[in-house]
Length: 148
Image 1 (cartoon, one colour):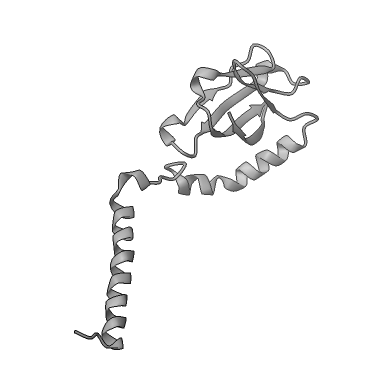
Image 2 (cartoon, rainbow, N blue to C red):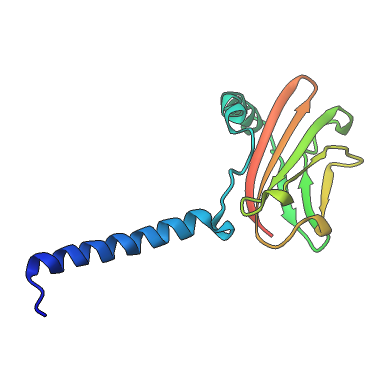
């Protein structure tokens, strides 16, 4: 049996469409390829975006900003030495972009100018750290991405 060129083109199209449909269906039904947003309340966070920019700008005007340091015990967040630690309040948010079950937040409670995030809470990999803090009536924000 001889196949003419018109039939060969139709067979090639059907094979190509079948190939593409196989990958589309397998990618959309397999749980291994499930990707969630980093945060659940994406729209609410987007409305807060301008306030975050203002708080970051406030932090940039400080003499010394918040800094991070990786140690064997975990991550040490250092607050400016010239501020009274009794007036510093806020939260530290740690986001793991690859797995939202590992995300957590910690309130800021200081006995000195350092706050330790323990090593047992941090798995190896990328973390987005967001320190949202207040000193007296001014709000500040510090963001950094680290690989632990």
